Length: 280
Image (cartoon, rainbow, N blue to C red):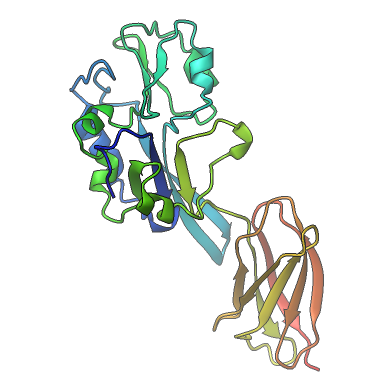
């Protein structure tokens, strides 16, 4: 998906559900920027210590119901960027296409932007005394190419396009912002950001057999939304897409068992362990 020749503002879309942590984006960023200046947008990236894009591993749940999620993180190119406000030299600027860059000639390396960034994606280059970060591969965008991370990803995790591109808008229809509480208005959107889940396993209290196809329902006690799941062949269930800090009324209904009810507070992922269902 590319619309680099359009004059409009650009956005990224990152689909976490597709990311396998292959690290090709990290390697490509190093290959593009280590040993190469792309002024005025940036000087060369150091070989070590900088990760203008990095893949954060997130282990979720408890054994045996564990899932790994991978979050590729780079500069969010915020419209309300704290780094821009914090810089005493006005060295951090925003291009017409929305990409945020650090003027390497004006930057004094004071570190104020590094401290101000809520996403922790600004790095100090001690060798040349300047702050550096992802530029969105501004030099490539100006040449009509995609950022290297978007170009090399084998799973189409990272998309980059004009924010008004029809295909991009369709792909980003259910996207979200990472840490909306920062109110930074980032130009990076996300699909598949981790949301709390309620997990557990069910078995028959009389026979000790694991129970498959048991319906488990969680009702949000604030807005009455309903989330459902069914146990698998091993009796495991996981209700996803819940909201942090919410209270849910849980209903567990076996085919020929007494219903189990409980109130669960989603303070992060919740594992209820193994739950016995009593035959009727």
